[in-house]
Length: 115
Length: 115
Image (tube, rainbow over all chains, first blue to last red; front, side):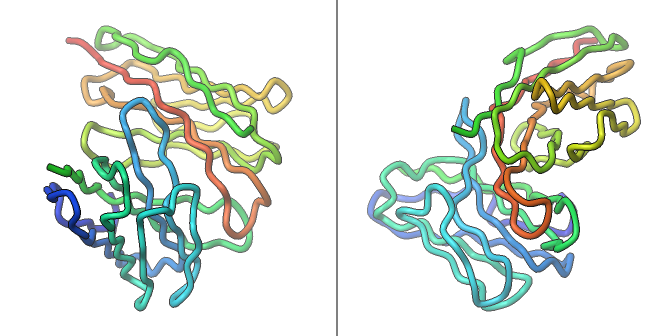
C-alpha cells in the first residue's frame, strides 16, 4: 500500500446521507485518483487530480465530489445523489510523470455499505 | 470500445506448481500494459509494467510477456506459494506515454494456491 492511507476501512451509511472518504499520501506525488471496485467488474475511475487545486471527472463522477486543497490529501464525498454507493473505494497516487509510464500506487481501500 | 479481457476467471493450483494467466486487450492507442496483484480486501500492488517495445518483464517469480501484434499478454507464476493466492489484474493504458494516462482495467483472475 506504500505511503497511501485511507480511512476508515469500513463505513456504513444510511440512505440519503452524504459521507466523506479520506485519502492521504506522503509520497510527494502530484497526481491522485479515486476508483470504485464492484464484484465482477474492473476498477472504474471516479475523479482524478493532476495538481493541487485542480481535478477532473472520470468515467463515473455523477453523485460524487472531491477537493484537492493540499498536495497530500484528496477526499471523496459520496453524496445522496449516488444511486448505488455500496462498493469498495480505492484511492491511488502517482508521480504524474511527464516522461514515461506513470505507475499508480493504491491505498488499502474503504468498503462503503449503505444500509 | 476499449476493453481488457482476462482468462481464466479463477484458477486453483497446488503449491509449488507453475501457472499462466492470460490477458487480451482492444485498447487504442496503446501506451503500456501493467499487471497488478490484489489481495482480498486490499489495494492492488504493481507487479510489472511494459511499454510497446518490451516483450517480457520479470519480477521475482512473476514473468509477464507482451505481444503487441496480437494484443495479448500473459503473467507466468513460477513455483507458486500460498501467498500468491490473490486476484491478478491486467491493466492497459490508453493514450500518450506521458502525462495523464487513461487506464482500462480487466476484471481479474482469482488465483487460489492450495497446500
